Each structure stands twice: as structure tokens, then as C-alpha cells.
Image (cartoon, rainbow, N blue to C red; front, side, top):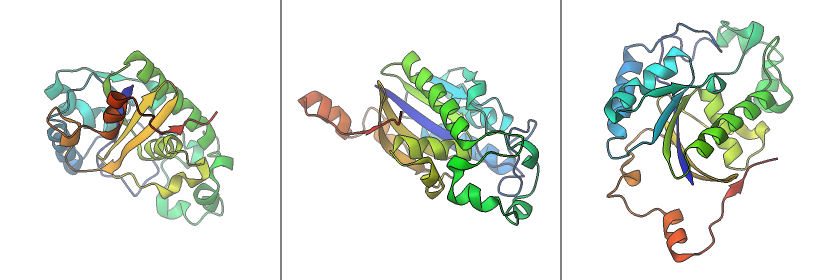
Length: 227
């Protein structure tokens, strides 16, 4: 079993205003840098096996303090990158909300492709493959994975067994941590959109239910991945 700590990057000057997609060169602002330091504090009792990140600066900057304190390198994976928003990249969210196709993004993302860009189905396939590969590389590990808001939302909806069209119901805040346990294709969602402490995953935390189930030999349920 691999415990994945899925992290959304911290605040930038453009967060919530611009659809910046895969645009590079957007760093954290002073608020985001403070969130990154606080994130490292929140992991104080959690010993990580590895740290992975989207290549975009807003993600690598978010986990840089975490890597420094845990004495782990931040490994960049291109397949953890934000969705390719195509010709919508750089447009304000206010202007996009006026478009008829914006409703499709909200109500039926499984049928939507960004103009000259990526579809949500492709993003889901790309990122589940990426996280699955990470889990296989670190069996029984505890791994931090830094990525983006929509990526984190579609992943957590998927691991919870929800259809892609329902992913917009999941809220993922900046610098939040969501936790999923992956075991040979099965997933158990342990935490979603947490911005508080992670002491429950430390050595002095209460034994989590899945460890109790393993110790007693009882069967544990979990949401299976879609095929």
C-alpha cells in the first residue's frame, strides 16, 4: 500500500482570476510562500518516502520547503502538469464564464476539450497513470505529490468512485492536502481538502482503520479504479 499526499500548489498573484493552464513562469506570491512554509510545518510528524511535483514553478515552489525539511529531493514529473487549456490559456475567468461552452465545463466535463488543448478524459488518464506509476515505485511508501487544482479534483473524484462529470463537486483549496491509499489498483480516500495538521499520520497518531483491519485480518472496503 502506498499513501499519496496530494497537494495543490499555493497562491499566486493570478489564482482565481486567470486560466493560466500550463503557462510557465508564474511563481507563488507572498501568500503562497507563507503557505509553502506552513505546509512543511504540517508534515513535521510525517516521514515522507519521496516528493514529486508538476514541473510548473507554482508547484515546485510549494514543496521546496517541504523537501528541504524532509531532506528529500523534489522529483519533477511532466505528467503531473496542469491541463492544457489551449486557446483559452491566459484568459480571465470572468470572460470565460460568459461563453456558452463554459457551461459544458461545469455540467459535462467528460465531453469537453479545451479549444486546441486537452480533454478532461485525457487529463484523467494521464494523471492516474502518473500517480499509479509513483505508487508502484514506492510500495508501502508515503509520497507527496504536488499538482494543480483541477488535476487534484479529478483525481480525488476518481479515487472516490465518482464519475468524471461529478468532479466539480469536490473543492480543493490552495496548499490543501488530500490523502489516498493505493493498493494494487484499489483506492481508499482518507482525507480531502485538508488545510490543518497531519498529526494523525505521524508515529504518535491513533492507528488508522485500514491498519487495524490489516492487523486483524478483516476485509476493508475501498473504491476501485474505473477501467
